[in-house]
Length: 151
Image 1 (tube, helix red, strand yellow):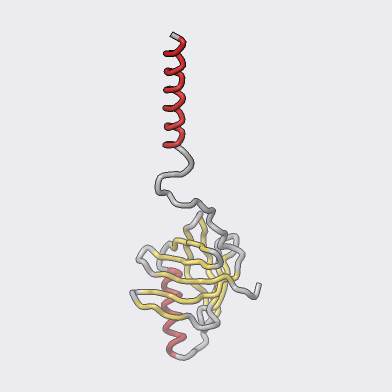
Image 2 (cartoon, rainbow, N blue to C red):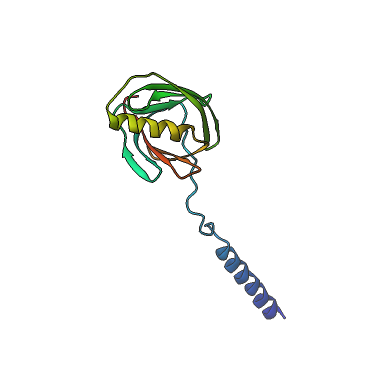
């Protein structure tokens, strides 16, 4: 009788070990979980823009800073701008841009118009990775930014 109790006990232990291993330490295909880095209060240099399927490199002057209140200030590549906005988690929405009215060469003005449109066309989804930020519109247009080193 004791021999059967020992076998039953060993069998239960083996099943529990197998169960623990099967349920063990990793989530099914969820990948690593990382906290989204903040996007507010940081000076971001605009590296490029893909709008309407056309990729453009940003002029050196293009940058922005999103405040804690969601508002943004910066340079579109030629003209300075400011905008009211809201930030909810990874979703950012900007209102109409207030800009200066300087004239620049055609390439900078084309970039500026495309960037202004992308910033204000609707809600943007923010994704950060290391020192990079990507703002993506519902239409797939993307703004690529990098944390400014001049902070």
